[in-house]
Length: 405
Ligand code: PLP
Image (cartoon, rainbow, N blue to C red):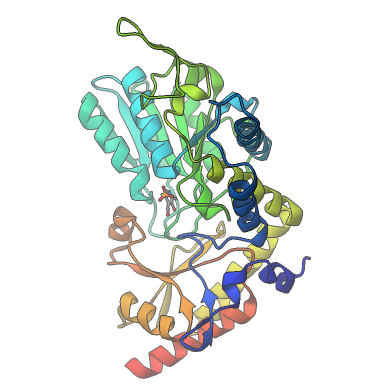
C-alpha cells in the first residue's frame, strides 16, 4: 500500500484549518482538490509557453499545441481508446452530454424513437435527453432502480426495442456511489442496435476504465473531479460514429474551409472543438493522469473501497443513522440520513467542526423521489482521505445527535 500522509502532503489545501479545526474534506464527488504537480504544471504552462493552440507558426504556439495534443494522447491511453481522434475536449461532463444529445440527436434521432436513461442519474444526464426528445418528438424512457438504487436489469431488458436509439447511464451514481453494471447495459443495448453513453464523472478517478473493452459508444467525464482543472472535460466517442455526426457548435478551429456559399468542417477531433478550447485545462488532465498513474488505479480503488466499507460500518453504529443506497458495488461516496435531523443542519454543524460534506439532492431529484426523501448528507472520497477523518466524521455526528436529542 502507498503512504497516504505523503499523498496528503501533495495537496496544499488539505493542510488548512477551518474555524481552527483541521480541514476534513469529504466533498470530492463535487470536486477534487489538486495536487502540486497539477498546480505547478498550470503555472509553468502560463509562465513558459502560453500561446493559443493550432493557430500560430511561432515557437510558443507549436509548444502549446504539442502539449495539448500530448494531453489527448495521454487520455486516449488512459481510457484505452483506439485512436486519438476519439478524444474530444469539452468544458465538462455536462457539455459532453449536451454535445452528444445535440449531435447524435440531430443526426440519428427521429419522431417516435426512444432514449433510455437511468432513474438515479445526475440531472446532467437527464435534462439534455429531455430537451432532445422534445425537439425530435422522441420518447424518454426510465430504466428503473430498486429501493437500494440498483438498476433493475430485468426491467431494462423489457424497455429495449428496435425503437431504442440511445441508452444513457452513469458508470457510478453521484448521489449514492453505486457502480452500475455498465458492461451488461451496453451489451443488451447493442443487441437492438442502440448506442450507449456512459457518464463517467464519478468513475474515472476511482476505477480503471477501458472504453474499447466495454465497447461503449460514448464515455464522458470532467477534469475537475479527477484532480485537474475546472472548465475542461472529455468526450470519448467511437470514431466511426463521431464521423457521422453533425457538429454541435460552429466557429474557429472546427472548419476545413469557410465561404458564404459552403463551409466544410474539419476532421475529427477538431470538428467538435469550436473556438479556443481550455488548452491549459486539457494539459492539467494529462498531469492529473500522471499523478493517478504514479499511485495506480488498482491501489486507489482498493484503498477507497476500504474507506467506503469502513465508513459504512462505523456510521452504522450510530443509532438512527440510515445509509441510502445499500449495495455491494460501491465507490466514491456514502450517502446517509440521521433520523429527525435535516441534512442541511447536519452539513452546517459538521462544517463548524471543519468537516466538508455535501447535503441536498446532489442534482439527482428523481433518485431522491425514488427513495422517498428530500435529500441526504453525502461524504465522498478521494485518494487523500483517511480512516482518522472518518472517525472525526463519526464523532461529529454523535455530537450532532446529542445536541438534537
Ligand atoms: N454526472 C455526474 C455523475 C456527476 O457527478 C456530475 C457532477 O457532479 C455531472 C454529471 C456534471 O458534471 P459537471 O458539472 O462537471 O459538468
